[in-house]
Image 1 (cartoon, rainbow, N blue to C red):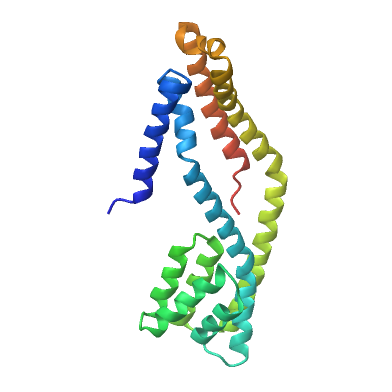
Image 2: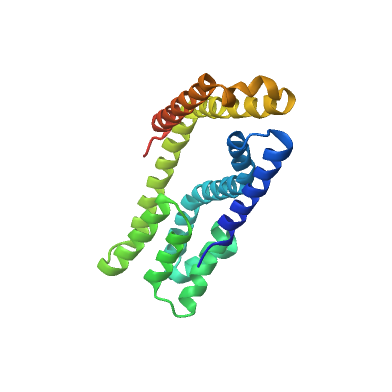
Length: 232
C-alpha cells in the first residue's frame, strides 16, 4: 500500500517548482532546490516532532522501569504493572504501555505485545527492556533485580548521551549554518537581484563553480555527520 504523505510531498514540490520557474527565478535548474526544500518542510516538521517524542520517551523510561520494579515488589503481576504505568505516566509512555496492557488482556501473547511496543518506538534502551523481559520469562531469574539494574544502566547511558550532545552542539550548529547559508543566499539574490546570480547557471565557469561547490558541500556534510555522530 502506497503511503499518502510521499505522494502529497511530490505533488507539492511540483506545484512549488512551477511557481518558482515561471514567477520567481525563471531557471528550471535552480528552481528545483528551493522547491524541494519548501515542499519537504512538512516532512522535516514531522521528523522533528517524532524526535522530540522519542527524547521525551527516553527521559521517562528509567522512571517507568523503576515503577514496574516497585510494583512487582508490592506483589503485582507484570501485566498489572503495565496497566498502572498507563495510569500514572503521561504521554508518550502512558498511552504506549496502555496499548501493551490492552493487547495482553485481549489475548495477544506477552512477547508479541512487547515486540510491538519496541517496533512502535525507536529507542535502544526500550529494546534492552523488551529483550530482558522476554529472556527472563523464558529462562527465569529475579525480575525485580533485573529491572533495577536495567534502570541504572539506562540512567548512565542517558548521562553519557547528554554529555555527548553538549560537547557536539557547537559542531552540529556550525554544520547546519554552513549547509543552509548558500541556499538561503541563492534564494535571496534570485529574488532581489536576479541578474547577479544568473551568471552561475548561464556562464560555463559559473556552472563549474556550482558543481564543485555542491560536491564539496556533500563531502562536508558527510564529514561533519561522522564527527558528531557518536554511538554509546
